[in-house]
Amino acid sequence: MRKDAAVADDRPHRARHRSEPPPSPSAVPDEELMRALYREHAGPLLAYVLRLVAGDRQRAEDVVQETLIRAWKNAGQLNRATGSVRPWLVTVARRIVIDGHRSRQARPHEVDPSPLEVIPAEDEIDKALWLMTLSDALDDLTPAHREALVETYFKGRTVNEAAEVLGIPSGTVRSRVFYALRSMKLALEERGITA
Image 1 (cartoon, rainbow, N blue to C red):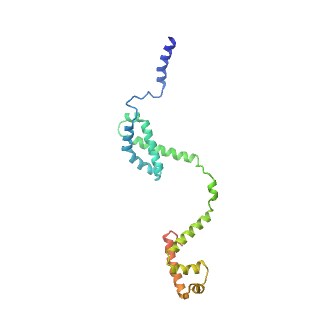
Image 2 (image 1 turned 90 degrees about the vertical axis):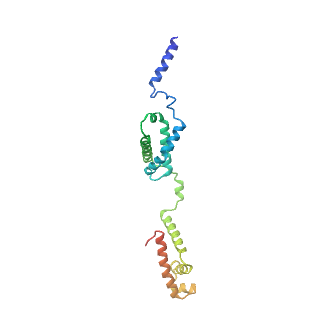
Image 3 (image 1 turned 135 degrees about the vertical axis):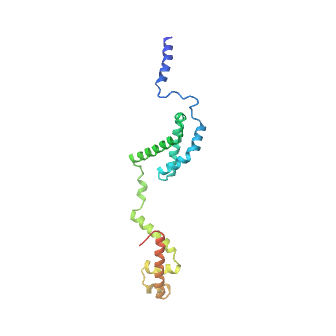
């Protein structure tokens, strides 16, 4: 019988040393509480977090979700609190963002180096982008202006040689090149390239 008494005495002793008493049935969070939190606070909280994460919507949604889960887990404390829970939610969301930022700063993002080996050198990328932009701007020219410009500037022909190839007078080639260059300048400026 002493064993039974010791066991019976030991159980209340363990319960006293727990950090929190077992939750009462009214303090257990339910789906309705979560729905109410989401309905009332998710929109404003998302708007706030979007500013904290520089508009990264996916990250902001993750932070809001984590904040609401923490609120759900701490529903007993929130039920006892007086007033709005929004200040608590904002504080938790801000701390989640700060913790995420600190963890990214503490350990750099690891990447697989193999894809980097197939990326062309920076000057090759710049050259390719320049050629794409130039080709796009050339498409804005009239066919007559484009022909004159291609023959003189890109193929390196003189005005007389270009006139002979195109079968037009050299004065017409000069005129078309002049207007083609002016149009090219405008087309490149529209694409953000200035001389």
